[in-house]
Image (cartoon, rainbow, N blue to C red; front, top):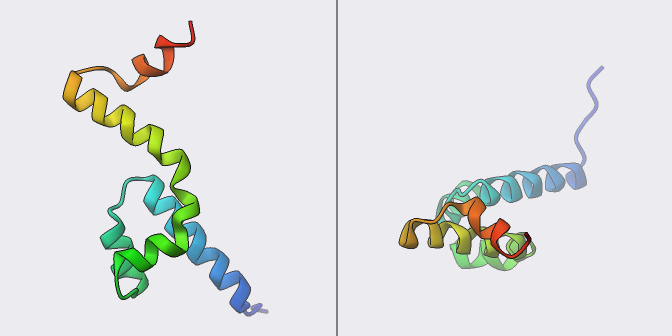
Length: 80
């Protein structure tokens, strides 16, 4: 017997998909298009709670690209 998915469960699944996609580095424009949102700005307004932990990841990746540092080096510089 199949159990129907409630609207609440469907919303939860969408949220998990969005969070996972953004954390994996999928561009917000792509995520927004997949959701059928009118713009990436709307997607970011709704899912901005996903971003705080992503800021340090972005900084480490930028540093690695610009300065040739290993992303793990930055985490160990201040801690050891």
